[in-house]
Length: 173
Image (cartoon, rainbow, N blue to C red; front, side, top):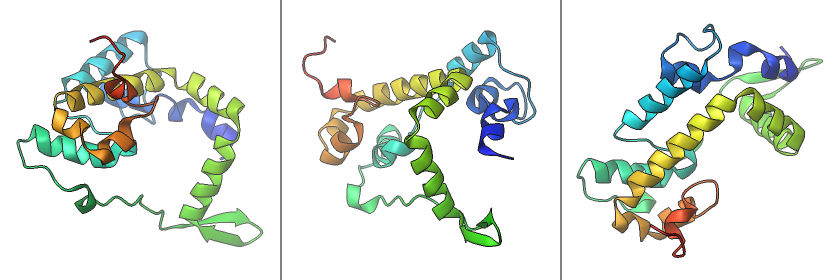
């Protein structure tokens, strides 16, 4: 399957919405409806803990705080993205490590704003659910001022796509 075929295939669209709404195994389920989106949104908001990969250290620290455990030092939380262990065949007998192929793929995708917008449009429910998860995560973090004071948390969260508003003193509460 080509990348364009993957992007256009309904099997690979709205995976989060399908999973969190419970409409079936995501790769074989029907397309989600607005009602399914609402079920998925409510289900995400019911979780005691929502973590984010892009804020991994903060997520671990939040988990410990929610469980009433003493905080872990940031340098004791180690995160290394999993590498793909299989090789990827590029054609003409050329093979490269899967992790390298993934990095190359991401670089190509991130340089193509049109492709990103198209992916976001095809997966609008998943994009909206991601924002719901980010809001839930930021709210939980805000309940622990001790976390907000930590430099590693500030580095991870103080950006427009995450919880920047928690660090902006000009926001009304």
